[in-house]
Picture 1 (cartoon, helix red, strand yellow):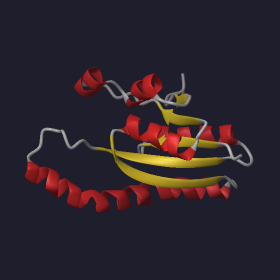
Picture 2 (tube, rainbow, N blue to C red):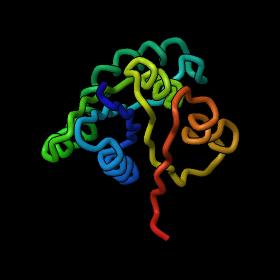
Picture 3 (cartoon, rainbow, N blue to C red):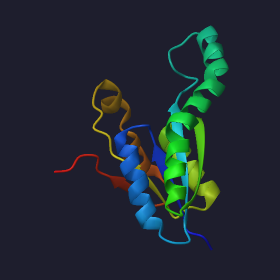
Picture 4 (tube, rainbow, N blue to C red):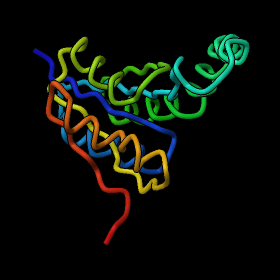
Length: 147
């Protein structure tokens, strides 16, 4: 059985650290699945017309995320001999990462902790906190800053 780890990416330098940490964790013979989630909810405060326009931009957003985040990370991993694949999805990041972990039979999820603050994180919590509290597999949170 191949050990699979899910790596949550957000396009930040922290995501690169999460990929590197996961690469070391999975070792020889393991596989990584990189997942970039474009945060989106049909329940946001938008008009139906705005939601319809958002759906039309989905394909463009997915292509850009692959080009700028997923594909470079995959190329780097493959240059190190690591088996990897990537996907881009729309939705709630914590829910999507946990769903991808279950579908892949992953042994864990690796994400970077962000230093995001503000009203949204105070009200809804961070992706890391939500994932740690509700994930069906172990979650490794990689710090983004060196102390």
